[in-house]
Structure formats: C-alpha cells, structure tokens
Length: 539
Ligand code: F6P
Image (cartoon, rainbow, N blue to C red; front, side, top):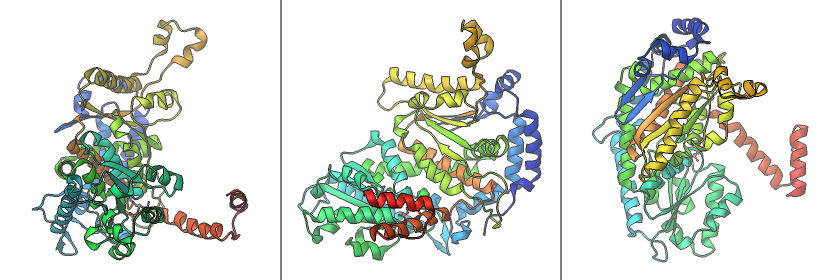
C-alpha cells in the first residue's frame, strides 16, 4: 500500500504550531532552563549506549507535544509500518524501500512481490563473507599468485560515499589491506591513486547498481586498460569483481558470474552500504565487523519501529528539523562529529538527505508551497571551531546543529580525549548562553569593542553522546539518520526515494561531451557557448 498523502500545512497541528511559534520564537533558551530545573531530563532520550539531549533547542514541552501531534496527523505510524513491511512506498519507481531488510536477522520474513527476500539477502551476505575471508587470508590471489595488498572501490554516489565513510570511520578496526576509493571521473584523481598501485596485488571492486554510470564505467575502463598494460585478459577475472543488478554488462566487462555480487532495486543507492555495496567495508575491516555494523543498524531499526514517538530518536530529531526548517525558516543544519574518524560523515549525509528530500512536488503530484529538504553540511570538531563557528556564534543565520561525540576514545589517550570533549560540551553551552553585554563590560573591553564581543546565544543544538565508536554504534548512528530522513519526507508529503533531479545534468553532460569530443558547436546560451569555446581553444 502507498503512503498516505497528507499536506502537512492543512493539519490542525500545523496551524497550532504556527500560533505557538509566534508565542515562543523570541524566548531565550536560558530562560527556559531557569524556569524548569528538569528541562534537560525531560528533553533527552537515553537508549542503550546513546544519550540524545535535545534540551538546548528553541522549544518548550508544548512544542514537542504539537510536533508529535503533527506526526500523528500525517499518520507516521502507518508510514513506518509500510516502510518495514516492504510496501511499494517508492511509488514513482513502483518499488519497496527495504534497506532495513538487509540488516534483519536470518529468521525474519519480509516479502517483496510475494517472496520472502531474507534468504537471498543472507545468501549474498554469505558470499561476501566467503569472498572477504579468502582475500584477507591470502587464499585468493592475483594472476601472478601474489596475495592482495590493495582494494580499490570504483563507484560514485551511494556506491562510494557510504563504503568510504564507513571504512574511514572504522579505521581502528582495519586489517592489513589498503583500501582506496575512486569515484570522480577526474582523471587526475584516478591517476593519483593508480600510481600507488601494483596491478599484481590489487583487487578492483566495481560498484554500480546500473553498471552504466558514466563516471564509474569511465574509471573502470581506464583502469582495465592500465591493468592490461602489464597483464592479459585472462587476468581480468582474478582482479575485478562487480556489485550490480546488471549481470550482463558486468560479464561483458570480463568479470566472472560468480564474482558479480547482486543488488536489488528495492535498495536505494544512498541506503545501500548494508548490501554488497559494502563489500569494500567487509574487505577492509573484516566480515565480522561488517556484521556488527549491520547488527547495530538493526537495533536502531527496532528502536525506530517500536519506541513511542516521544522517546524515539529518529522521530524527535526529524521533527526538530521540521520545526526550524518550516517555522524558524532556517535552511541548513550542520552536523559536527567530535571524532576525526567521522570526517566523511557529513558528506555521506549530504547525499542521503538532499538526494532524498530535495523535492518540490508532493505525493499528490502537486507543486509544494512550503520548505522541504534541508541543506546538510558539517565538519568534525574541533577543526570546525577554527573554520565556521564564528558564523554560527555571531552570524545572522539560525543554524540548528547536531553534535556527535563519544565518551571513550579508541586508543585510550585520556588527556587528548578530555580536551576534545571539553570543547564538545563547551561549544553547545556557549551556543546556548552566549555572552551578555554585562559580561563583556566586566571583562574590561574598550567601549568601542563591546558590541563586537557580545554573543546573543540562543543557538539550538542537539547533543548525541555515544559510549564509544564501534561497528555497532556506527551502524546505529547511520540508521538513526536514515530514519530521520524518512520521517522528514513523510511529514513533508514527498517521495524520498527517487532521484529524478540527477538526470538532466547527466543528459546535458553526455551531449556536451559529444560536442567537445567532435569539436562541434551545438546551440547554447551565450554563456555556455563562450565557456565551451574557451575550453576547446585551451584544452
Ligand atoms: O546520484 C545519482 C545516483 O543514481 C545515486 O542515487 C547513486 O547512488 C549513484 O548515482 C550511483 O549509481 P550506480 O550505483 O547505479 O552507479
């Protein structure tokens, strides 16, 4: 069954939220804390090794009640059931959305077109496990019988961002295999990586759901040609494997059928790292850790599916995002992980969030008159404190922030970790309190500088404090955001699971490539014509 199609603006809750917003929009959080000593306790969620504190937000208890009313009126519960049950909620592509099934236990039952897909999911997982272990152990070797030393993931978008982010995040758990990611069609990027590689000891994983994506196939074919400079076609099947739904194209590339890892069309690219798209993860950190990652995500699935909404982390974080996006009119939200391991986390979330919710037509096919998908950005702390925190503290924009931190480090350097986490806690406190004129005057700043030294505070932050970074906790964290994105899309009455918006650029790129390659002159606006002319003169 499809998702219900309620326009959120027509709900009673939305109208109440609009009135409520006018009442509280200028309330300073400092006053809210002063009025309610239990605020932090009431506006936080503790679940397993996660502690989510959302008290440093421009809300009252009533705000949360009204946001939860909104969730009820758009029938979020019904949407969640359909999501997990495999209903065709991706209506525009007539597909289910079942990345959750990829991490479900073996005895689960999830039906797609009348067939329980869990057995085949676990068959593929077994295939990933056997293959990963044979590479890691040295049993599987290259054409000159040398063990593999390097893994190269060739993919882009969801066939790159998830695996790349997870491999970096789990560096602490890595094995001896060096893992590289080639994504951009930029030849310089490609050559910077292959110049480090020995073709005899390198395994290439071509990841493409369609096996037609221009960047991925260009990179794969250039690497294949480079590889054949020092070997012959019999060696291709020993060094290239594929992850794809397109078996025929993978085989015509020279990959043996048993080395094509299947994907399913009910798993979207940006949610696919749990599938064979995560082969590079399994190769890089070992299959046991890959399984632990999936187990963590499954636990978050259960939390999301079963927990009451007022105590449900994806639901609350999503509703807060709606509150700022649609009532405070903030357009971006920033994610600040206080762990360098999560250096790629915000970039991963950019595709997951903006390719899902960057939509302007609603589920009835009508143009939308309210704001939808937020712009997500971010960098790890403490580096970001020396990059863009000036704007967040004293700029003119309201930017809700999500801070992610871990109570325990992995290498055990307590002195450094205490410094890192002191910044983590201090920043959200500073963003809440700011610094008043009186405080600045007491610091003895010259009269002419006082205004520049005042911090208004009242900048909203969510603190996500996790016990320690592990495959399980990373799986939970990623799944938390996947479900946050889902809830946002349900409330905004959009389809979060297609991505037609990426097609136009691809079409124009292909015709422009023909023009450049043939040195022809097609019809363009004057800007594009002049730019192409300049390029063709100087390339
Ligand atoms: O960005 C568009 C997109 O289709 C993504 O959704 C997808 O993850 C990426 O391109 C790569 O697609 P494929 O895995 O088919 O190469």
